Image (cartoon, rainbow, N blue to C red; front, top):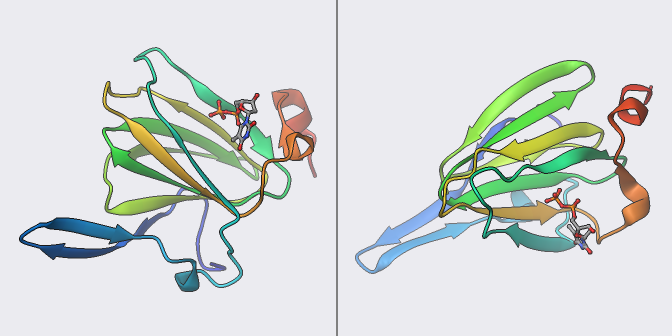
Length: 134
Ligand code: TYD
């Protein structure tokens, strides 16, 4: 975990056989990361824009389990654009990262693996407030 940088793609374990593929996200691979919630984003339109916020404490991984989309991230003054287009990898989004998800393909499904349960108080929804976080 500590060696991961925001926007890094982590390869997921894949178990392939004649009947298909089984892909595993196992938190045992990420020291200090416990899964407390999963949810998925789907049925987006091609002009949908999601995110546009940060979190104080939440760590997340995004997985394009189907289709593709663009993830724009800002962390500690550094910007990064990542294309999520493979179910083979998870994109690391640490706390205090502004994220914008857009450019969804019609079939896009974004699985989000999160370290905390839902807490609206953990959101930073105004970009101005985000830029003021020390
Ligand atoms: P939000 O996190 O803003 O979605 P996105 O970043 O994908 O655009 O959440 C959208 C709405 O759903 C908001 O009203 C909060 C609510 N919500 C929950 O009630 N529980 C959850 O676990 C999540 C992620 C969102």
